[in-house]
Length: 344
Image (cartoon, rainbow, N blue to C red; front, side, top):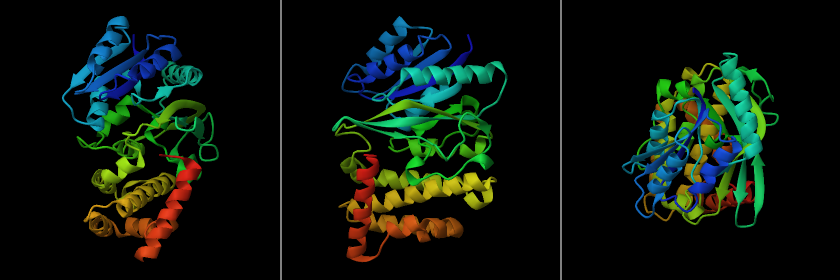
C-alpha cells in the first residue's frame, strides 16, 4: 500500500518516553496501513531505545520501521528518517512529544483527499500546543489571521505572522519530494536544526494548506531539554552555527520571489539573530559577545539589506541595546516575552 504519511521520530536515549509518542500515532491513526512510523535510534548509549524500536516494528511490521545509526545528532536522525520514508508526506515528531488523536484523523483525511484527487499541496500547516509539565498549563500556537483556513493557497495569500507564530517544525507537514528535491542542510552534532528544517524548504513549497487543528503536543519541562534556558546558554555556539547556515541559505531579497514569503522569512531570520543576541548576552563565555559581533559583521558583508532589516528594526534594536544598561533592558524584554509565551 502506498503510504500517505511518514512520521520520523528521532530518538536518543529515549526509552523512558518514546512509547507514548509512538502509541499516540498508532492509536490516533487507528493503526492505519497507509501510515508509516520511522523510529531512528541515533546511537543511544544509556538505554534500550533501539530494542524498543525493534519491538514496535515486530508488533506492527507494516507500519513501524526501526532504524539504527551511529550518533550524529538530531538533524542526522531526521535525515535518516527522511531517507527511509515511503509516505507522500513527511512529518517529524520528537520522541518526548506526541500527537492528538482527533487532530491526526483530520489531517490524514485531508492528505488522503489531496492524494486521491491528485491535488498537489506542498505544505500542510497545523497548530501545536506547548505542554508545560511544571505548572500543567497549555499554550496553543495557531495561525488564525495569518493564514486562511481550509483553503489551498500560494504564499501571496498569507497574512501577517506575529512573533510567536513562526512556522516551527511542530506545525509542518511537507510533501516528501519537496524535502528531498533540494535537501535540508542540517549539520551533525548540532541542536536547533529544526529552525533550518522550518526555513530552508519554504521557497520550494508552491502551495500550502492550513488545517486548524491542535495536532502536535510539545513537551516542555525536562531539565536536559534543548530549549531549557541554561542549556541554550551553554550551547550558544550551536545557536550561532544554525543562524549562520540560515543566513547563507538565501539572499532573501534576491532569491525569494513572493514578497509575502520574503517578509515572513526575514522576520523569522531576524528572530534568530535576536535569539543569538540574547543568549550571547546571557552567556558567561569570555568570547560570547565577540562571536556575536562577528556574526553581525558577517551578515553585514553577506547581505547589507538583510543586515539593515535584522539590526535596525524594532526587534534588532530591542535585543542589541548598547552598554550595560542596554543589556539589562534587553534581558528584561526577553523575560517578559518568556512569561507571556512560555516557550522554554
